[in-house]
Amino acid sequence: MTSSASPSTPLRHPAVRLTGYAHGGGCACKIPPGELEEAVAGLTGQTGENVLVGLDDGDDAAAVLVREGLAVLSTADFFTPVVDDAYDWGRIAAANALSDVYAMGGRPVVAINLVGWPRDVLPLALMTEVLEGGLAVAAEAGCPVIGGHSIDDPEPKYGMAVTGVADPERLLRNDAAEAGLPLTLTKPIGVGLLNNRHKRTGEVFDAAIATMTALNRDASEAALAAGVRAATDVTGFGLLGHLHKMMRASGVGAVIDAAAVPLVDGAREALRDGFVSGGTQRNLDWVRPHLRTGPGIDEDELLLLADAQTSGGLLVVGELPGHPVIGHTVAGAGIEVR
Image 1 (cartoon, rainbow, N blue to C red):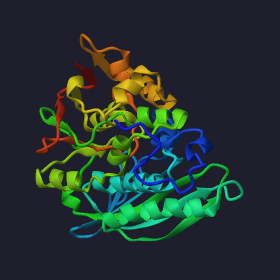
Image 2 (spheres, rainbow, N blue to C red):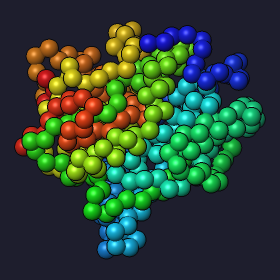
Image 3 (tube, rainbow, N blue to C red):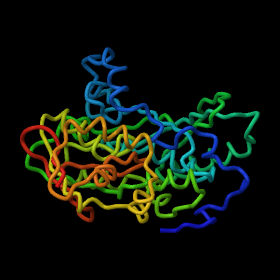
């Protein structure tokens, strides 16, 4: 854990604390999962002969067949500042938006920027730093960023709408999990706790920034190479929330080995010191009716597993070399945490 005044990229506007202009940070500012599902319940069931993945199972991106052997993926993701450094915020938001395409087994081919900016409050030069950060990560992904849309907004927001392509026969889906398979997680969790600590204290955690800016490209390619059929990325609804959505859509259950779940350096200390976001608590409240817990699993352990992530890793139904197996799928329903 690094806790210092020196972030991974030097602050060019050190007097500006971007997180102070946001009511929440990163994916923790998402509408709670239960409320969101209720709001969109009447919009499901949109079908067509070319719609491969729609809204029904809460997948990471939409997938439409445009011709034999080619599916187009479409997604959008944006959020309020998760760190004070503008360039790092841009990098994190871009990696998070691109992740939805990787979580479906696709390759991003073009992105556009989505920006809300309080132009009378924060300098436009700071917005430029955010856009530069996003461009840097998109360039690493080999995805051009061409234009976008901006509005004058009292709260700063940034993200991307991303278009990708995939093999329609090899999509990674929420509804394709089968019982009796291992569960693999490709990034540590706990960044929500550290981001909340950063917002409240100004401490900088380089390990959290490093994991949030890392692309899920290699993990996605490894999942496809392993013949995986079901995966999702772990973001604002936490590990438990996204696992519940995938298991529910697939009609199976899961067992999680809490001790096997990797944590970002400093996350457990941030939990001990009370830096739990409201989004994390809402995640746990939503999934609690579907949980069973074993001996030694207390409320703190469940809060860690429900921690609202920003630009988290892939949760894969299958085993990927080099990444920890954190549990397995089972016949039945619900999630058991041991």
